[in-house]
Image (cartoon, rainbow, N blue to C red; front, side, top):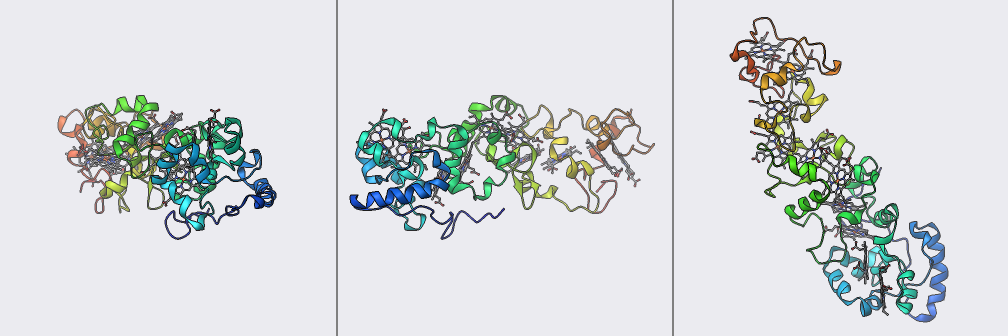
Length: 325
Ligand code: HEC
Ligand code: HEC
Ligand code: HEC
Ligand code: HEC
Ligand code: HEC
Ligand code: HEC
Ligand code: HEC
Ligand code: HEC
Ligand code: HEC
Ligand code: HEC
């Protein structure tokens, strides 16, 4: 799928709709043209009608119009290239001349009242090619009817539930926390990332729009887990890999949301963690079974229970097969 960058001279697909038609007599011609365009456009369900222009909307919706000018979507009103010059309101609300005359709710589209898929489609007309949206279909939000507007407001003051790159991390986390209360509880454990403090965000690890990895995990360079963006020293390629690091991922040994155990490990004692895969217990899933420690490992001896005392390169080694250095 082509993913043109969001910045640059033409970040969005070329305009598919005609420019604003000035002069009332031209409205009829516009209506004919528009209904043809609307026939292929996603919002085909809305009754075809005529554009009123943002100035007309502002007459009755003064506060929204003011806030809108300072929002990121405000550029739509000024930018000739995007096809919504002077009628940006109607990019999301549909042609609104009828509503501007009647002032009845029934004659204007309100994304908040649409089915989730329809709301999303209205936004995706312009945003589908955004690089962060490529894993959308796999993402839990799209699959569970969490609309774009659950997280983004478009023309409200910045204090509203806006989450955008410019917004502060704490506000974003709060938004996520509203629905994910059990995850928030995990971050109250003693060993955790500094998410509750607001120095790190849920979106440092997750792409809220979805991704190709399980758990909508963010990816770095190609399809590596996003953890490696900050923990680059755990990235290979290692001459001697530790199989689970690459195959099962970081969460086979760490609890990324927080843990009662030091280093956010899944087990309180390191030896216990290692022996889940490195013991002849016969109960593990076959795919995770590692080799059995050679006989000189006296596992009753405390010294040997602390495996990482000797196997220090537990994430992979450049020089030693037994991950000793
Ligand atoms: C003449 C005044 C007037 C103009 C001009 C006007 N509106 Fe409205 N608009 C209203 C009123 C009044 C309501 C509330 C209607 C109701 O609640 O029944 C409303 C409601 C709305 C709603 C909410 C509908 C809903 O289902 O809740 C939207 C969206 C909207 N207007 C957008 C627009 C847009 C976009 C324009 C410009 C194309 C526009 N309005 C122009 C008076 C106007
Ligand atoms: C990028 C899409 C988009 C644009 C552009 C846009 N709106 Fe909206 N509008 C929405 C969404 C989404 C809602 C539903 C409420 C929400 O989630 O904020 C909404 C709701 C509304 C409402 C209902 C009342 C409310 O506050 O919920 C009015 C009125 C309205 N918009 C007017 C306008 C006007 C006037 C403009 C132009 C100055 C405009 N909108 C531009 C997306 C847009
Ligand atoms: C007509 C095209 C168009 C539509 C429809 C549209 N957007 Fe946008 N959106 C834009 C443009 C243009 C920008 C500004 C991008 C830039 O500055 O690079 C933008 C920016 C954004 C941003 C980033 C804001 C920021 O602060 O960085 C978010 C979030 C966003 N849109 C969400 C939405 C949502 C949600 C909807 C549906 C309710 C929607 N958009 C519908 C064109 C559109
Ligand atoms: C309006 C409620 C709501 C908000 C807000 C919300 N989520 Fe979700 N999220 C859900 C639902 C529903 C699911 C699917 C069911 C589940 O897995 O719990 C989900 C699933 C997930 C998953 C599981 C992975 C997947 O793709 O299935 C992750 C990760 C996630 N959300 C992260 C976030 C982050 C990060 C934020 C804040 C930017 C956020 N969520 C905000 C409702 C929400
Ligand atoms: C679960 C919450 C959530 C949902 C649902 C959501 N977003 Fe976002 N979105 C965010 C967050 C958080 C960011 C900021 C990401 C960051 O800072 O890395 C963001 C960023 C953006 C941006 C700006 C930068 C970028 O990543 O492209 C756009 C545009 C955008 N979202 C559009 C949309 C659209 C369109 C939809 C619906 C199809 C949508 N979002 C659904 C949370 C959400
Ligand atoms: C340090 C990275 C990291 C941070 C920060 C993070 N997560 Fe996660 N999250 C993960 C990993 C890794 C998984 C496991 C994914 C898998 O293997 O399926 C996960 C799984 C999830 C899941 C699905 C399974 C579950 O536990 O319910 C949800 C929902 C989720 N995270 C939400 C959040 C929210 C909300 C925040 C912020 C409060 C957040 N995450 C912060 C890394 C992180
Ligand atoms: C945005 C950067 C960032 C990302 C992404 C990130 N981490 Fe971290 N991680 C940190 C920082 C900074 C610390 C230092 C601890 C602190 O914040 O107090 C840390 C600490 C840790 C620790 C504990 C170290 C110790 O000495 O106790 C583990 C384990 C860890 N991270 C694993 C992960 C895993 C697994 C992922 C991916 C699911 C991940 N991290 C993603 C920044 C990050
Ligand atoms: C096979 C289990 C295992 C896997 C898989 C694993 N780790 Fe670890 N990790 C550990 C153990 C054990 C420690 C504690 C080492 C010690 O006690 O000296 C640790 C410590 C850490 C630390 C803190 C100390 C340090 O070395 O910086 C970070 C950060 C970390 N791991 C990140 C990651 C990341 C990121 C991944 C995924 C790429 C990952 N781990 C995968 C077992 C694992
Ligand atoms: C999730 C399962 C799992 C966990 C937990 C795990 N390992 Fe492994 N380990 C493996 C697998 C699989 C291999 C590769 C075995 C092979 O190639 O035959 C491996 C390989 C090794 C090797 C290289 C020797 C060899 O047999 O190739 C050492 C040393 C090792 N692990 C030590 C540890 C230590 C120390 C811990 C605890 C910090 C640990 N492992 C935790 C699965 C695991
Ligand atoms: C006192 C240091 C020390 C401790 C503690 C230790 N090991 Fe070892 N381990 C070694 C040495 C030395 C080797 C042999 C390397 C060789 O044969 O070249 C080895 C070999 C291994 C191997 C086989 C590696 C291979 O190349 O085939 C595994 C698996 C292993 N250890 C797992 C563990 C586990 C699990 C623990 C914790 C329960 C542990 N070790 C604790 C020193 C230690």
